Amino acid sequence: MATRLQSDAPVSAARKTWIVVYDIADDKRRTKMARWFEARGDRVQESVFELTGSTAQIDAWLDEARKAPRFDAEVDSLRCYGLCEACTRAVTTWGVGPKVRVPGKAVIA
Image 1: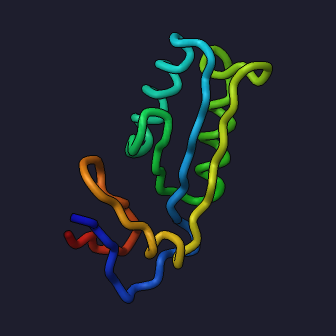
Image 2: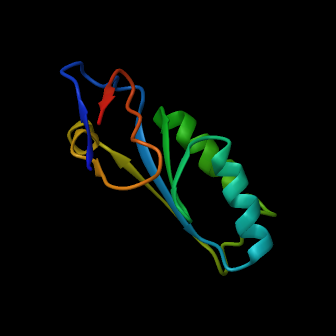
């Protein structure tokens, strides 16, 4: 069964949903990165996280995430995608895992 977001309330411009994905070559660094993001958001796949926050907060988190020993820019990659309100509303999930959290939104299954 799919889960969709439903609400007519506007998403705050200051906070939105962000998708962070990474490919970390080293097992030890990958584990450090996973634990680091688990403390800040929801893991939706092995190396994919959903975070909620302001642009400034996400920028600060990504600056911190890219520091050693978690990240080596010579061999690793890290990407962050900000979802607009319409994109966040269009998210559909199937199966297990956390549901998308959107500020000011209710999740209905």
